[in-house]
Length: 354
Image 1: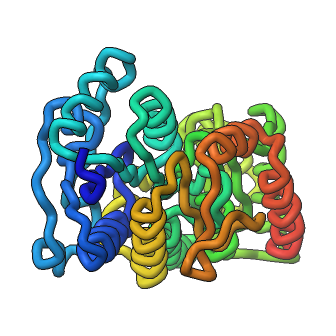
Image 2: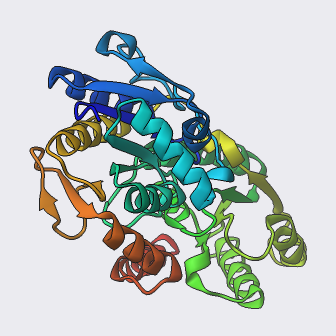
Image 3: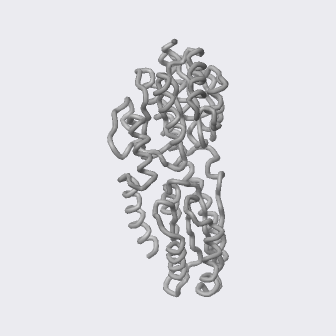
């Protein structure tokens, strides 16, 4: 097997900044005498052998683009041991000794299992706009997504003030409410809802009614109320709006309520400067670690806890097994990071309601 060839793929949901990571990885590996094979369409392309050589000159203009130029797709076949064996044979036949995976929790889980079964070295780079991966303070794509949400909320706030309206804005974040939390702070929202709060529907409705009454009281007399809701909250946005309608009609002196679901617009667009920096620096570190022979690891950006150092002082790396175990705790609410986020938000929200 050729020890100087690595493959790279992007998997799961796309995230702005993936291309910056790809560019940095290709350029770093090429400068060290390694060849890079770009796998198209994620694990699906890995199964079918859809890949092509990537040279430094091939990737010059991609870092500023959104999405992923290698494209992404999910693969049911790769979930089976037979499918992973097939993929391993294809990689070995292509002379690859390393697979770098850029993606979210599911993609990194697949990389971990694949590496253990095949013996092929695997290195992960976290990319998820939901920021739902442990051992990194930010995943690739998070900053761009927050900026997109805040820009939309600013525009919604302009029209809301003009018509004296309350708006519920639904954002992505099925299992992790980081996007909702961060964008609520940045857009000066009146309330934020996300799954980790663990509140029943009746409690959510009662709390929002209280927020609305306070905002439209003679003391505050606001012209705009902004409520940001993560998609992972059990009650639908339409149902929530319906349950608040009676309060709007009887206790706001004529204010009205609307809702907006931002959806996939949050995932698109060119990456922010920060996401280009994070993607580039994690791509550089991942390539260096792969070249040094590391395996079963993920790089992380300015993590909350100190991991093993890389050549970049802002990038550390952690064992994939630890990353996946900690991510499970992050999502079920038992990880210290989740508790810290909730405590921080509670303090901020009390100030925003003044």
